[in-house]
Image 1 (cartoon, rainbow, N blue to C red):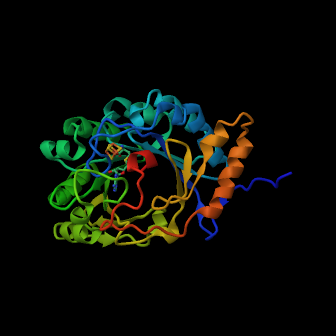
Image 2: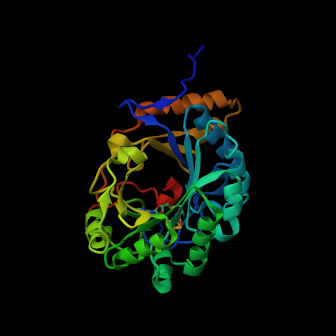
Image 3: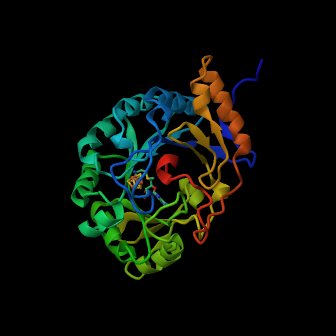
Amino acid sequence: MKAVLPSSLVDQFGRRVNYVRLSVTDRCDFRCVYCMAEDMEFVPKREVLSLEELYQVGRAFSELGVEKIRLTGGEPLVRNNVMSLVERLGTLPGLQQLALTTNGSQLQRLAPALKAAGVQRVNVSLDSLNPRKFRQLTRYGNLDQVIAGIDAAVEAGFAGVKLNAVVLKGRNEDEAVALVDFARQRGIDVAFIEEMPLGLIDDHDRALTLCTSEELRALIGSRYPLQAEGDPAGNGGPARYYRMPDSPTRVGFISPHSANFCHLCNRVRVTVEGRLLLCLGNEHSVDLRAILRAPDYHPEKLKWAIVEAMAIKPERHHFDNSQEPQILRFMNATGG
Ligand code: SAM
Ligand code: SF4
């Protein structure tokens, strides 16, 4: 007989894991140049977790004390019937926050339903305000549609709407201030993300395009005075946030290269194939799908596998854009 399941997840370094990012699909209607190759092979459908399996995973985590679930992908809102999953996760009693990361293409249509289903926070990716450049960076994206989606999200009244921008040198770093202005006009936050070496992409050499948070902060700081918000421990994430004196908008910088917040890491990810990934920059993982699909599946078994996985969560990652990607997973399959 096994011991009683714990009510919270703690790893071997004493970090409490209270946040899980669930990748609900690896498919996407965009092909952003830093995220995907132009020609992508997606995971065969039978290997992707079903909506029921995703719910089982979400429930198991919430019963183990996880308070926040973020749905991501791929593009979560292009998964068939995804709203039925969102609605079920929205009713989990232990969950304090249900969040979503999206490219915004379907938001105009779905923002009110997402709000009604209990989603509190929405992150929308937006790398450029120039329609032609936006199309080049996303390969298929329509800027007007995404802006309409962002405005629909603001209108729907989520507790938080945030923009995420990946900045590539020579491509869109000249738009950083314009993106801050766009966020200020709507009173929402914006975070700038350093490109990470995930997956073999075919568009550019990441060693040449890395634009560090330091450079961006100087660029934006020359237009708006930025006041540091303090330790990122306070916001439970890897972003360092700054405030401007004349606006509620906060400007964040996510710097896997130039700053390392691994010691504060409170999160794990579940890939589309049901692999529980303990660190974005390492391959340590546990196959939850095998447990979900075993003939003797029981929710307790799933929970024990999650509890035991905490023992292999690595202490930190080592990203280096100057080398071939050490991690061959693409961001879309990982749940970025
Ligand atoms: N499709 C949704 C979206 O674009 O927001 C959700 C999934 S996407 C993989 C999540 C976030 O990861 C996006 O903000 C995207 O810009 C970011 N991302 C993708 N590839 C990345 C990379 N190689 N380095 C850093 N961020 C990346
Ligand atoms: Fe799709 Fe998001 Fe990746 Fe862009 S970043 S290709 S929108 S999954």
